[in-house]
Length: 425
Image (cartoon, rainbow, N blue to C red):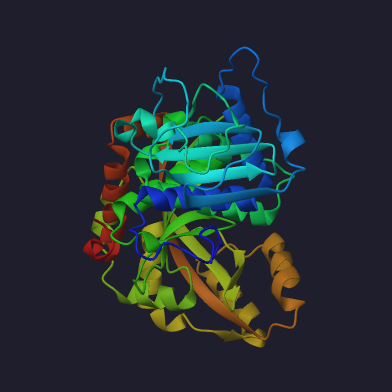
């Protein structure tokens, strides 16, 4: 089975091996014409032509039968032109000319456009491992009629990754291609971290996809298990935690056209079951009162199944709100439809929620006028800690941001006396 079959991986090689990176990238080029085109144009932009050499044209070559292969030893090369390409981690100079070599070559990648052009690709994620003869084609099975571009083309992984991130914002790219590009970028982030040019917020500018990727990588850097980092489409990236009082800790991007900020979000009691767990645990109200740089508030809402329906504001002091539910934990249970209205009116009289005309209409639209027969009661409690874009960028440059976020998560969990050592490094 060919190496670039999507399902045929290198079982014998570690994921950090450079061959795995080569294969992953060539698979992406094989399945995404946008990624293939940007790669070819990047190569063309970096090609230094000698007198008499013609610039290669993607549009001319793409109509030929083209193939992409990896790890080919001395294949037959009989195209009109041959082009040597090196991909590495940083810009390097190479003044040597490309010429046939006596070496026994095993090409990391080889792209062939019919009888017109062959591109041989050498991948060296660490430039100190490059030796000049690696860029030369082997004489074995090389036609004597092949015209070789004299100058090697040297690409940087960071530029390739920038191009791929830019493609994610192109509206014409299919969902399948975006999944492939995202998967490749995640693979690089996890296995070849040093190749990621966006390793701090100051480099992400105001690009939403880059900001999200940086958030994901920060969360992965502070937890024991990167698999606990997930994304909720309507919310953002979060840590999936194993506590009965809270299941998700979010690091949420709040962005407008001019600026952005991060919001560390802990929503205790977000479901009916979590609320029972939260108010039956030992809540440290004294500790909560010390956390002056956090925003915290009542977060009462109702839900059906796993869908939250309506949120309510509260008139009561947030500490009294917590005390109320500690004393009335027996009231946190699923209500039948005919019980819901009287119950909400009781909570309104006790100042636990504001149940005015607007909320009554919202409840009618989202619940009473539907076929739902039950309703879950979720007296949640929300805590958020905001980090401005300025602070995030400054602290990320000095590697203080991960520490700040980790410490704040520990601080937030401490109000419910939860053991952070289960999730954080």
